[in-house]
Length: 400
Length: 137
Image (cartoon, rainbow over all chains, first blue to last red; front, side, top):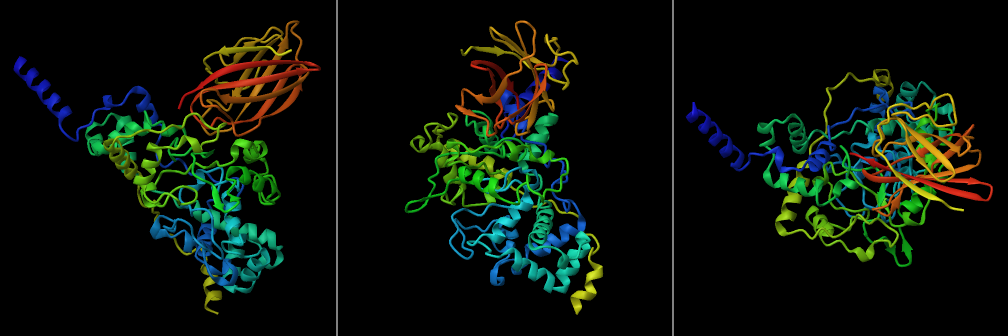
């Protein structure tokens, strides 16, 4: 009996010290709690109360068509999908793109947006549908006008039919702003469905929760060490919090915000001003939530001096697939991002800014590990089974 | 006059409504309380629990030393002293009478140690009451 007991202890010890076998005890209770707070993924997809088209099958299909339609731009030059390319994780792979003029901000991925409350690097929009209007009307991006969009929809029998089928409204009977908002709501309905799938990290996190050592052992050791830095000494989760790896707010991390000689990107400071002036914000007449419960943030956000140089904390899901990085695309690779935080330039931070940022002073091994962890946050999109064409009534119109 | 008192308490919040009675404050398991030389203050948050990144409101009651409801002006905020930053939102206060208020627009965007701060202005007098709150992740 004693022999069996000794053998059992020996085997257990050997298993725990074997490469690739992970022990929950490797994380402190605080780190463990932090890791568990990064899931589960994905969260429940709740309908956007401010968007009557949210979750509607026809609106989703209509929005997908619009997302790929170049006619939403001036002179039919660019579609949403030209900058948010599906094959590049819905980014463009460029530091700074050009629509009709040079753009001063990096193109963000349009995945996992349903759980955001602010949109754009400066949070210029408080809903996904309002954010969908912004690039369409931006002179630098798609450079369209509300009246131009209205003309496109009304004059195209197929688009017009799909619009009617989606909203049960005749587009010709709508004003240009009303029609533009509904187009944007269909675009938002489609973008809400762009949800990234579970990742190697999510499997590890779920295994940690379940105490499933076998499943945990499949997570690379380097990634686990990187995760320990991320959730512990690196203090990354103050901002990259929760299942989306973002607290959804804004921070100044010392990335320069000069865009040209004498011109600065005001970041969140300018974003709040744009938001407050926008006729499409949730305090306006286009919000479909009659209870106005979705307006709390917009009502109470205030512009402060410290908002200068603050930019949206980006989600880290799919981060390895969305280079280059930072609001201006100034950091080329994920390894460079790790280097950026290791040698963080405190001189660039506001004197009245956060005190949580400090150089991480990582060793080469730390950097490799952190990178290994970040690379486990990638996945494709959640795919759904195909459904019958919801616009069969428009097929005869399309053929005309 | 500016008085300051910090109360460090652990929250076990699970209900929204205060007692129908206003002053004096009745102790419950679900509220945070603090006092200054002149006032007693209690808050209850909703929805519960407070979560990172989710907006919440406070039901607040303030009573003076004679157990009369505070009828002045309240300005509230919260900050993370160790991080040197506040919230990104400015809560609004609605007076309900008899020392009761509803404060909307709180949102804690990080886990960690927060500090509520309530400025109570009654004519020329100003009192500040602060309450620490640890937001777990």
